[in-house]
Length: 376
Image 1 (cartoon, one colour):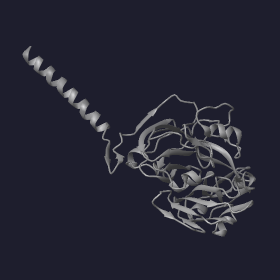
Image 2: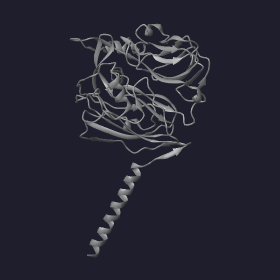
Image 3: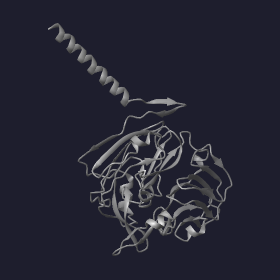
Image 4: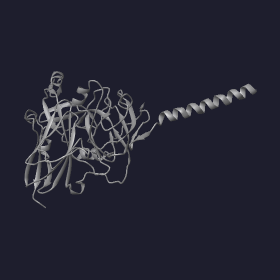
């Protein structure tokens, strides 16, 4: 009996110790220079979820950016499922895109430097997911799509493994950015340690193909102390440049052009996912107003020379970080995955052309319009 008691107590102590060690392994959070690292291991599981594919309080459709209306820092819970949609990217050009949230690029996520994000993504590439149903709740993004489905999104199925890579996150990529199969869900935490505008994209090989097929978007991490011009900005937008590599397939749909992607010969270079959207629905401002644009070159492969015809960038923060300030720039040169937050003052009433000054790309669609009204 005595031996049994000793054995039972020993086992109990070992059980408690193992539990504490496991808890410690799952919670290794620490700070260096005010930055937070050491997130728990990502969870991969299956769930019976067929609800809104995008959920988040500050998640919007391009070119919109929802203002942050809270003091201090916030814990965001964001869902961004991945699935296939047939979309239009130019007049008469439709293809089955691999998407985050149903559009290309995916949703704009807005957080503040120092915020914590709990991210969840289900691989629903084996499901027919509809994003245009009236009243579909979960985020401003879904509401904006229901009001302005400029890509004519239609559900489709193309089962494929996918993953998520946030450039705004500082974590172990082999854990958080791991690939999940159709039907699986991944959840993980990360902190927005650095201010700026960051691409997110699928990191599953071929990364070139997954990104070119539509799996990319941006996270805008606003500086915790803001930019020096915050009280003077009248209009604020997000613009993303990206490339499509498409060729005519069977029937009416286009398909991925492997050779074009490998040789960096895009069929279309576009702003906000569509060849004409920023002309059909131009950005707006008035004479004398200060406009801020968070611009990201999501590639996947080409550079961008972003310019606004008729304006000079009064302020430029490379990568969107407030310490990286430049002034009086005519053009901002950005490599693939590079970004900048730019501001300019609208000098007169009229139309201003947003353009990639690498004119071969402009002629493939990398242009847009800002329409300026009279001085208010």
